[in-house]
Image (cartoon, rainbow, N blue to C red):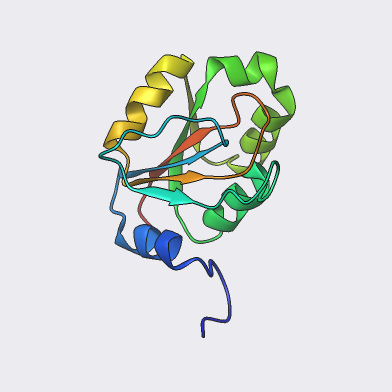
Length: 131
């Protein structure tokens, strides 16, 4: 049994397989996920698991060089936006319209669906390199 880090097998597998510039999306319960994109559904109930606790667990294992966040997040859910900025203080931050973020889901290695019900609690994590 794994002792530390991400215990979810699907997330751990995706993170281990990511290369430079690959994308992993962590989204709220309402984010539409294209049928061709790998869905890792963690949602159990409203708020469980939460968005930020899921992002923080992934951030411990994935080298993130850039995050992509919807501009709407800044205005509709500023606490989520500020938490992301604080967590990824060394990463580039790119703002896109929410419709563009939804389109990026189609090119992601996977989308992790949380139970979060805060509007626009979504982020695209762009993988960096550790060397």
